[in-house]
Image (cartoon, rainbow, N blue to C red):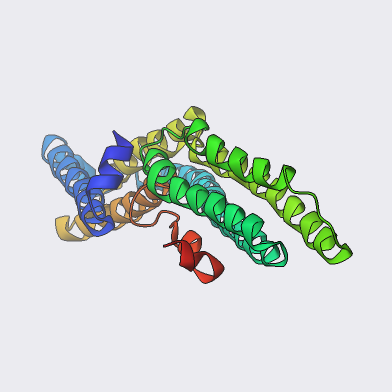
Length: 261
């Protein structure tokens, strides 16, 4: 469900819906509780509610900050992995320039097929949360087969051959790391803490009584908006390959790899 929402709605739309719904529900809940218990406006329990709200808010804020920072770090790590894989593929293409024309042509053809398979086949699968290791394994094996079948004849070719093989091993490693990141999601316990904590924190603000209804609603709406936006960040950052803020396949189409397109 979350992947479908991220892939079919813009971040702005999700922001309006998430934050707006959270604020509306909080304001409606506050108004209903105040009408049901008018004595809350006197603020008789504000001291106790204030201490509880402050303590719980601090704990929840630390948890939420930890989750957001963790997810942001995960997104940056995924971007680094993608860029590193694309760079290694480009370096293989450059190293192959030292090989005889027939070998160079076979390496280029194999690399081109691999790059297209990553962007056109595997990327949509990752966006849907269903990465398939076999989608590019055959194309990557073809690159291995081409290099393994070639026997360098000069010291110069041997140097570039060793470099190309080393970069190809790095491509295989980065590919596995990329697919692993595509399967990552926030652990269930952290999901419960992040979203369940909001369901406890926001209702607590209803109990903090103020004589003027507008001031109380402004207080409740401000807390709800902050919590709603934070939860939106958790929701958007949880899937590094889905949504508008997702990792882009652009590195596979730039620089030395541009000629494959």
